Amino acid sequence: MDIMRNLEMTQNGFQAMVVCMLYPLRHHHWIIVPVTEQQSRGEKESSYGGNYSELASGLPEVEVNPGAVTLFTHIEEAERYLAGGERVDNVVNGEGDEGGIGLDNMDIVENEGDKGGIGLDNMDSVENEGDVDNSMGVRPISDYIELPRVAKEIPVVKEREDGLGFQLLQEFPSKEAVKDIIDRASPQNCFGINIANSDKSRYVVKCRGAAEGCKWVVRATKIKNSEAFSIRTYTGMHSCSHATSFTGTKRKPTPRCVAAIVHTNYPGLYETPTAKTLVGLVQRTLGVDVSYATCWRGKQQAVADLRGSPEEGYKRLLSYLYMLEKVNPNTKTSLLLDENKRFKYLFVALGASIQGFEYMRKFITVDATFLKTVEDGVLIIATAQDPNRHHYPIAFSVVDGEKNASWNWFFTTLKTVIPDSTELVFVSDRNTSLIKAVAEVYPMSKHGYCIWHISHNVKGHVRYGRDEVAEQFRKVAQVYSEAGFEQQYQEFRERYPLCAMYLDKTVDVKKWAKCHFPGARYNIDTSNCAESLNALFEKARKMSLLPMLDTVIDKMAEWFNRHRKDAAAGPSSRKLVPLVENKMHKRTPKGEKLQVTSLNTFKLEYSVIGKDGKTYLVDLQNKT
Image 1 (cartoon, helix red, strand yellow):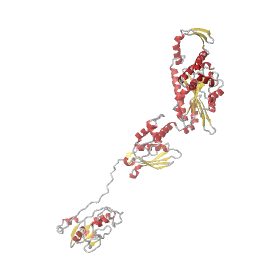
Image 2 (tube, helix red, strand yellow):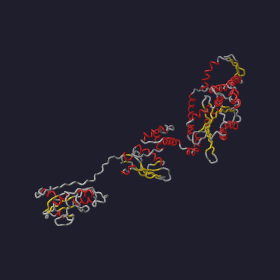
Image 3 (cartoon, helix red, strand yellow):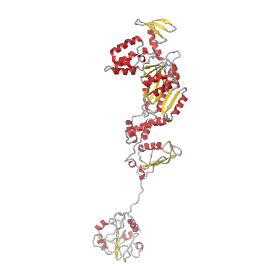
């Protein structure tokens, strides 16, 4: 039966060794010559599955049936066969010839001891019997090679966790949220992924080593009537090797993956490193290369995650303004839409600013600056100055540009919180639309021009010493007395005739000379207050509408809280603000030494003799 099993295995294509024996059997001797070659069913010239051409090249031609064992009845024939001699004709090929042993009667010979048959079961006994010797010239052989057994595969790599930490039925706000976590964990934990299915309702991901037997899989499906996704299938252990599943072509990080890394390393921050710096950060974190453009888009995505997209901001604008008025009493907001119901103009004036302006000098500086967003537009800021010479924001607005319609709408809306008055003074640059709007909406007010802007226009009419020309012009404009002004302006005219000619033709002297201005300009000759705020909000001007409003209002709230604490911390006996108190402290010793004569105590008119010996008329009521 062992020989039959070996033969069957040979016919099935395995490499097997058959026992080779040479023993006497009464009057005949037989030998089993094995057919031992690597079985290959792909070579057609082999009838039994072996390499027949190699067999034929070394042995005489013998007719062999598939899977046959050749039996010889005489030792001499076997020796000639093995020695490559003549062809043997007396061959028993599995047939019941007399004295021969065929495959069909193998069991009979094996079990019949009266015929002297030799089977595999009594092989050892026959080998040790004394009637068998080496006189026939052939040494008895009994070699057995055990067939190779199928060993249990020993795992080379231990199973490991994927680092995701998912749980069944765990919910995420969107499909992108699931993808972000997997895309970030894949390179961090060195396992490749293949997307098996991805559509609006499913997201199925398998390990790249699934062909090697790795069972890792994540399956998330959309929850009905919701944008959320739920984990429905999750096998979190990897049995694949890092060397096979993560090497080769790697998935490039997406902008959302970069944004997730930014959130991890810079949580809650709007100001993050540059895209060039993020390239190295992603390389160190994930171990994959990423392009500059992907990092730039990821940086923008990280900011959008914190501030929201512009589209969402415009959708929530009405709700935002409603809540702003709700939590800030007396706040004035106004929103204007175009004919297509799209955003056009916005105006905001906090209630605290409106109430506080009643105690300020009636002096407003106005300036506009461009927004650095895809929507473009202009940010308008109206500011005043408190007694301590701090910037005091009154209102701000977002419009489509410095046009007649936009400026007119801004001042019309501003008039609802700051009424027109003869005491009211505006200072701005010489934008024609702005000048026209002030004249139409605030006819009783006074409007002066910023001497800083005019000085830059003036210095353009000389070739050399332009900065000196600009400085000399500003000194002339700030002279308080008319006599002093006429003297210094005449000197300026003689030295820079082209500049003086430009001023005479383009600008009315009452708009820039302090001594000729019909209203009270105090110490304010420029629109620097508004421009300083524009510079302060430079970063905010790069944001979309809603985050920009948040930034501006947050800064205003910070100022109000700080100054309120400063005011409350001062002694109750102090009647003046710190700036005025310091000035009075320095000037009092000098004033005590001046000779003062009261002219009209009701109108507060006095005659003062200065250190130079000249007599001056001081009118405290008119502040001259």
